[in-house]
Length: 464
Image (cartoon, rainbow, N blue to C red):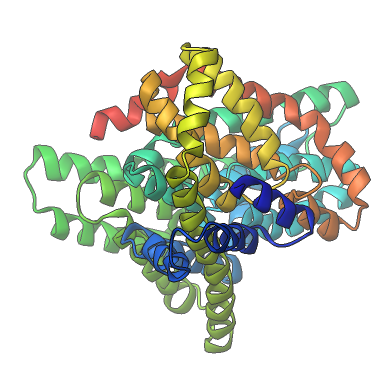
């Protein structure tokens, strides 16, 4: 009965959050077994969670970075690093998304932020608008895979999994995704005879490599000083940050400080300096320091607008979580989740077969539901089955998020699809066709991540 009411409301065009809460309320009224105020009580309980405090702060940090001129710096850094390759701006698109993913945590922010710059630059250099849209859409899926990630925060809260472990689990698969996308760009460049989009100049390339070396080497130096030399952690990090700002001023780096955002987050969480929620606050402070104090690209008027946008987005996300909380509780209380679990386990006891079926289900659901809503609905249904089959929940979390990111590229509800169609001024049909070839590296990555869990779990096992 509950499922029928939910599907009827959804088919009537009612937003998914209202459909979930409404179906639970109608079911309670219909049966008369519980007082209606249970709906409000369960919705409030669903968002009364410390890890969920990370959601508004990660959204704010991403919005601040997106509105503080950071995207142009990232684009110029990626252009210097890989723009001289054949199909250069396609590679720049992917590398830029890898860097921006470490600040925004969402695919839509990536598509709307860097996508505007990248699509215009690629069309100005003679690339077809369809190719520019396709590579931008595919690379935008890296946003929630490479930490920080809002879907990981929601999944971690719903499945009772460490958010820090999920963040670490996304690093290697995210880099693999980026590599496969760059190989796809190289294939199209070879097929179409594309050349480079900027001249190879040693000074520019060396400077870009030096920036990459600073990003990789800075945390390693701090780790040596803290672990081997026994220096106090907080004092060493503080001195290291001062040295970083001095180097940035002296060498005039393009994007070292913005790229340090995920490094500081992951380093702080794995060393125990702060929790993921505190890390989200630290990311906001870092963004404010860069925008107001260092680059001076933010002003008070922009900050107010960014804050209001953050409040709007946070309200939407948390309302979905609250509505899904009562809906998931009702699914469990009415025995739906147990029945689905018994049916699946009666059909197969093989984790590999279950993962195949779960992938098909999540790809389908991702085409119709926004990722936050899909996670909150699917976790109560699928996670108990994973536990019975011995599937690691960190691994399954990454599989789920990647499936739902691929769903963002599809009609009828793919938000990245619609954002890029508007940015590029293409019809939804042409945008959909442009994205189709990029499903090959995405689905290939999904298969590798699904059936080679060690790729996902190696880093989390080193620290958790």
